[in-house]
Image (cartoon, rainbow, N blue to C red; front, side):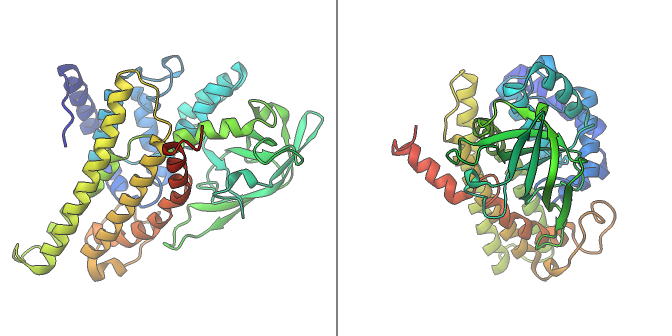
Length: 401
């Protein structure tokens, strides 16, 4: 499927391609291909973030006065598509794409002036403190407490599945500030330093053997009340706004890039075997099915893009539909990568040590198992797919406002 571009948008696409040819090194492309987690390793991810920043392109969705580009919706889509097609690393979104929008929407002038430049420069690296043991899909049941004590909150509790907390110097955190209120009414949204006394980070090694996740413990952590974003006990409104950004966005550029690499892996795996080979033909049919799924998601993305270009309000269930279809298709592609890799997928590598350099086996095969195991969680994080189906059904049946 091809998006018909105007002359101006073709010129913009060519500008992006020239930039990628000049700035996206072979090492960064390799790191982008070999990233099997939610996003790339912190080294290449932040290196690429800062390279984009020198061009003024690392926070393109922000308002122009804060460093955004002022691009049209079509230009944003073209940019995302070109980065994915070039195998650029995917940098951590917690700062620029998650906390920044809520700071812009709910922050005080002082919070904006202090936080946004540090996110844009890469000086601050953020973690997300949402899920807790027993409070994942039902996030409103969270129990991490913040008790007001003069001009501080005292925080006790823990957060889990905290991606890259071992690298973060800042965290945005949902905490319960009114234990007597209804579940969603007694929650506040805090932004604070990860180096405060009383914070302990314990690693969670995933089934793939990677250290992306952590559990974070808070023991009498004193956080200044200036860390509050928005109103006290109204943090659920902030959290819902943030989730729209976490679940939203276009899924087809990334899926299209993965599909392209799968076709390349298939050709490498069956080199020298006839085109009518039974196993190759079976893989070909499954790849064709996957291509149809990616085309369908791209069609959904382009419908959303067209509506945005017309200035229409966002469809409230589009982020849930995109998250549901995008994550399930992503999992389907990793299943196919295992079938193509065959026995070579049994090779295990440490992603932090193998993001660049030579490999003794085909690259796609070596990283197939790690991708597969990591993406088992794609249908859970950012709201489980079961919850997304409930949200979609509620909107379609008129059961939710």
